[in-house]
Image (cartoon, rainbow, N blue to C red; front, side, top):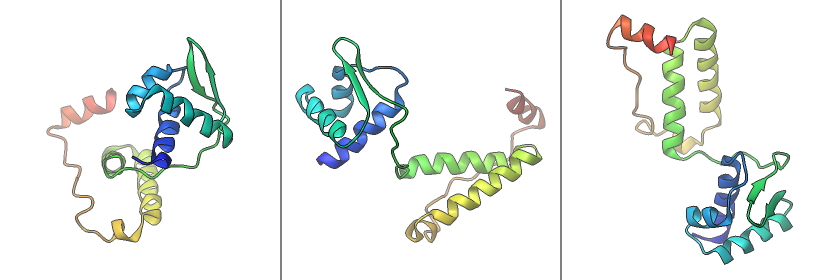
Length: 140
C-alpha cells in the first residue's frame, strides 16, 4: 500500500471512531509500525487535519475537519443500493419515494464504466416470504 492510500485509510479509520483511539490500535488496524503511524499522523496534521493526540489517551479527528467523500467500494455500493431497493419496494409511500429519488441520484453520479456494466449490480430484492414476516420486519 502506498503512502497516499495509507493516509486516506488512516483518515477513514479515525472518522469511524467517536472517541480517542490508541496509536497501537490504529497501527494494528493499518498493519503498520507505531513509528510509521506517528509519521503519518504528523503528515496529516501538517496538511491541516485536526487530529488531536495525548499520551495514554489516543488520537481523535475533530469533527470540524472536512474530508471530501471517498469513493465507495463495490461491496459498500451494492449494500447501499440493495437497501434502497428494498425500501423503495416495501417502505411506506414517503420512504419509498425518497428511496427512488436516492437511487436516481446515485445512478446519475456513477462512473459510466460501472453504470453501463449490466452485471455490476446483480443483487435484487425479493418478496417477503409471507405477509406476517413483512409486517414483523417493519415493526422492528
